[in-house]
Length: 324
Image: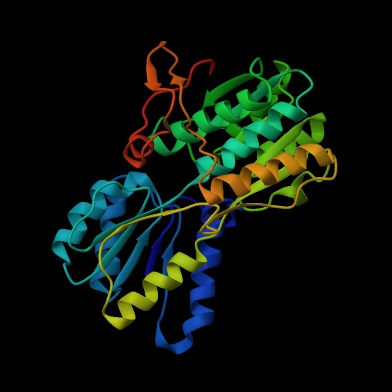
């Protein structure tokens, strides 16, 4: 099996969590399989070269862990029809291409609620990476969760055009604090935002893995993504010869997404409401994208009386009203 990572496995975020799942697979199956990984692979033609090399050297199941690998996956999969490719956040299936996604927007909705309740200035900042669907819908979910708690709370976004750059993340986090932001969320992979929050006495919410150790006073909690169950499931399917291309969405219900332990600084009442929201989302009685929802141009995107469909969530390319 092969794994292709867009950043370093030591980022304590996105890539770290994928590699934890890889290591768990090795423990589970032992000598039955061998895994390999390549980290810091650019979302360019380099990815196709790496994928081709893995396929040629006997890797029969390859996980590509960033949306930007899509074109490389499509081209390589055609050349190696006997290799199963799994593409994170992808939207193109093929005879030997499956997709898998985490419903991080569910966690961001709850995070937005907590952020707005915990903010004293009413200003929340979001460190974004690239304006792709995955990031856009998470930003929107954050704003909608904030509006549930405080309709007047402000959400500001800074686009960094990188998944992992501690220097850029530090600079942007400091800029947020200078502008009065007192809760920082991130779609980036390093622990820099949490560390800035710790130094500057504001709050932060980490992403992908538990980042609380890097800011024990500042970290309210972290959004966790756990790929282990899905990776084990797909590995078993390939070994059994039953693997088929499909699209997987995992959220609170599937335990692909979870929240780490809450910082004791969060009042009990806020914690209880957060747990209620998580339970409601898991049971299907609460929907992060419940209409009516307008975008930043005043266009009604989701009318009252219904929530966004899977297709609407999967193709979301607009920012919700009030996002700066």
